[in-house]
Amino acid sequence: MKEFIKKHQDVLLYLIFGGLTTAVNYAVYLPCYNWLAWPASVSNVLAWVAAVIFAFLTNKPFVFKSHDWSFKVVCGELTKFLGCRIGSGVLETAFLFLTVDIWGWNGNWMKLITAVLVIVINYVGSKFFVFKSKK
Image (tube, rainbow, N blue to C red; front, side):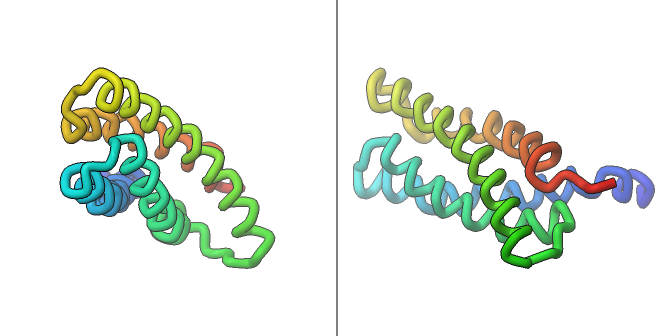
């Protein structure tokens, strides 16, 4: 079991912090969409901003073991991180706009469906593009 955890530590940590990032995302999206009755796409953009900030601050040190907080390194990582997250955020928001705001499907279910895809896209982008190891 220890060997499995050690071998897959980055994936397991990403699942933990990805779950927490998703919780932050939902903590903003659900009240905006359900209580304030804002469009799904607007609610999603606000939730995305909160989740991206949380994700960068946790993924950098805890998941991808990037501990250099110098201005140059953080700017480079943050630029690539935002590039990846903007891509997945645009896809998610477009999907919610189409399925919920236009077609009238359930915004809570559509948000849940997109979460799975977004987690996978964001992990791949972070692992292989943003915080890639310098080995």
